[in-house]
Image (cartoon, rainbow, N blue to C red; front, side, top):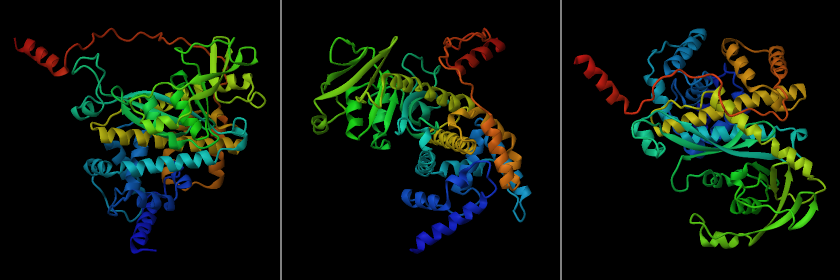
Length: 457
């Protein structure tokens, strides 16, 4: 082994010693020193062994995210409290400058490597009983996020065109790949809300290597695209999606499989600008697509065999696509990722990655509790897990957790069940009226100047 590898290993052994009192986040269980060492070598991470090492900075960032993205001062105060409980530690300043600089030094590639490693661990720990027809299902969906109105954020993630300058907020688009059984985010891609090659389909194309042969992709009607389906089939994947509203479905045509269930032929469209001619010619000239209808719902799929994949099972599978909407609600509302806090786009992207990391760590804890109680992971409440984690923070941070206590915590989590409400329907409207405050129709600084001018006059 080279001297560089030995030095890196010693550093990460020291880093693990720094965070040995963090069992509240199952980081040390699903992410070992060997994993950290390998990721550091892969991304070429170089650092000095100091208080705010990459590992310690990442853990402090995680706790900050779990508390709703609170101030950096609170993160430093928690670190100060931790050092007071540990012996032979020098006092550190309560100022936030060192921690903020450490967050800036934190490598995006290192965070992303940790996110993907933990997502891989969750996916591999999925029990066979939680698969669908003995196949892994991955859900794809997109969302938007808002951030502070700074010049740097506006440059990379501009606000919507219909908003006046100085009145809107920078907005980005995020597409995630979710594990159907556990709810973990396996991968994600970011891009501007609008502009060339910034659509959800374009972001999905960046993550095609995330899918493995035999995977079933579950998506809404926006992803029912000939080219996306052809690219997925080239990797040995199948798709279950809702029919795009612009495509007409006529069950009097095609190969009849049953009532409102048939196989039709889709023809390759014209080559889009983003696809080069060589790759376009490799795509098949036609696709065999199965279309089926239940009430007003029309589902399309590449699973043509009716024996293992019945009409009822496919409709039931598509209806579980709503899981990803609940997953997005969990990470955006419960964890506070809906409105980001960082002032620069690089830090915004790191903030999103750390949110995803914290979300996946919670999902890993939920999966462990569900396996302990022999129940599906999605039956455990995400919000209750976050509440339990934060309420036990002092115990988990400062005390050594024994096996009996760990089992008791897992049983408490397993008892926090999500209500089973099949066919739930709610209007997309709010009952509570907001306060009747006037809308800001000009830049804030201009409004301030007008107020001051009236006071002076």
